[in-house]
Image (cartoon, rainbow, N blue to C red; front, side, top):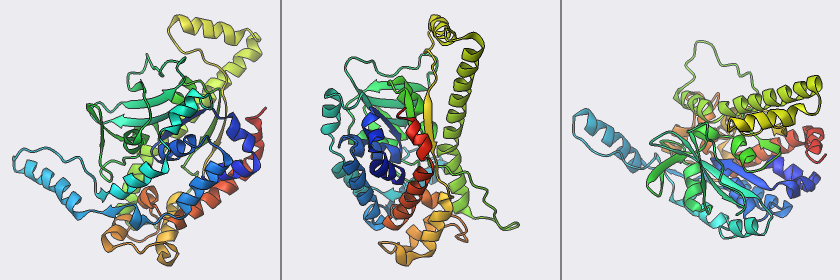
Length: 370
């Protein structure tokens, strides 16, 4: 939101040029909020205000009842008493769900697509049974749903984006309950598609603005000291939700470099001829895709740890179970906390950082308008 705030104030024309919005996890929440308001500068500032005034106690609470149900189901199976695993998570999320329900103007998304403001608005979720990524897209009637004929793990659906799609996309495994859509159960879309570049391209984007969440950090831990279960959980979340993005951008760079080199060697006919030949194999015709990727200039986990060290800055006082679950053993870092610390103090720190990172990328952002 800090990145988009800087753009809304200093480069609002970029927002006007964005016609495809894709998001996973919290990106699905932000994307649908902004899409439902036309992705205007005022919409960006409105969403920034919502984040800045969040109170974690008013959004999430640790549920001992839900935790008991989860552990109880596992214990029953250990003693051969069969039972179904409950569709729940460690957090009680009814207030979180209400927040998302009230924040997004759900009927406006299809209206703005039909009116031509957007070509498509899409969110991704992970189907638990197969582990595949399902992309739910509200798109122009004259364009097909996104298809990946050579990758069966990606499945596109034409859909009117509703609350359940966004909740499914943002359902962090074990912490939030899975969400049922039709006959299938879904969890966080970031497991396989944290930064949905491929859906954006399949839906017609020819330039990309990527707001990433993984910093290039060289964190040094205290040698000989076990960092704690909080950090272990945080590393697991990082590997699931963040590492794929770097791989996707690297692949995009390789394709761009290959096409650029081919054009230099064989002339301007190289790309059209390559596209024609790829079409014979049923492949999508590759083209050079310019992009700007803005990622945090500081370690987000460390920022969360600092907020937890300074509870007087937070809007609410966390309960003992909640604080114990979010904090690492020594509070040296709190990667896991950074995924669920829905508090205005942490949000303001992140948005301030995002504004700085966007300002430092001003030249690259200008290239999107060339």
